[in-house]
Image 1 (tube, one colour):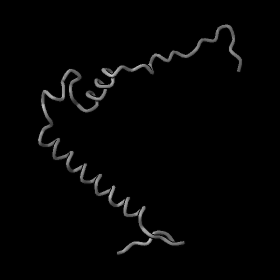
Image 2 (cartoon, rainbow, N blue to C red):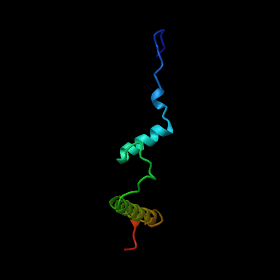
Image 3 (cartoon, rainbow, N blue to C red):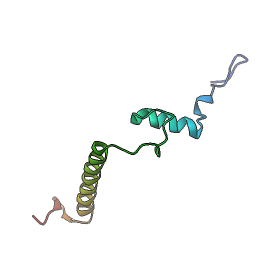
Image 4 (cartoon, rainbow, N blue to C red):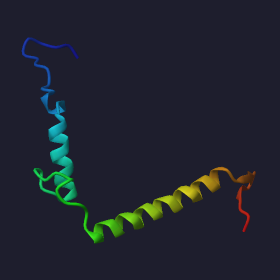
Length: 82
């Protein structure tokens, strides 16, 4: 397709995001107000517990994946020690 005289390039200004804009978006998505600094108030006990549970679940998953990848297999598929 050839560009005619009325062809105008797409505006790419939406691609330009400042670090402050990113911080504001992250704060908005995490439920904090955009002006609140993380040093002003720490996470609640519930948030810390939920984070610990998620961290443990991710750690368990990583161990299982590592075990699977490092495991043995044959033509029929993976073999397990169980």
